Length: 239
Image 1 (cartoon, rainbow, N blue to C red):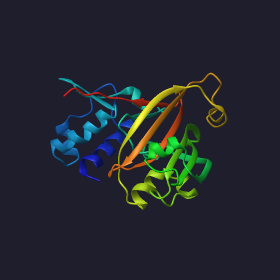
Image 2: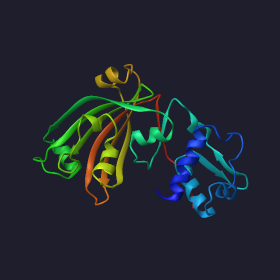
Image 3: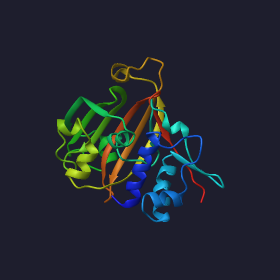
Image 4: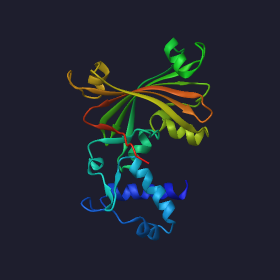
């Protein structure tokens, strides 16, 4: 991990640990660069990450402030460009994520799944449904398809921890990007059974295809989020 990423992680931890007051700007870049023994440019790059995540905002002539809404403890905030996986996102926010396996099998893909993963109908895929709990509360119901030949070694231990860590650290593959669609849905029976949704509770569904750095898709998934436990933040910066 490069220096500015390490600093960004530490700054994020400080912010969520209430190290800095929210009613005044955080220390300026020069002061922070002295604290972290880095250049001002490195410090700026570290803070830029938190600005893009919607955790900080800059007010010209006044300094850099914490976005108070990002500190809500009852919701998971995910930046629109973030592809770290829920486990890493939660870890960086000081909470604990656990998983419950609802379905795990290998099968041949439907035509739609094969198209999304750029494979043929004879290539087996994992068919995985997991309930993700944050601090023991149900947050997300994930339905994921992955080609078994591209992502080998998925087992119960991997599913109970972090699939993305397995891909990055065990398989040595690099995730490079994703195509994401976000929509509002009515709850289905799975949502009612596992997320504790009522019949009139809205569901935030995220459909996405994730790619490796060679351009090959490795995941086609649907994540169904409780409306009261999740927010996706988009930040547009004018240059």
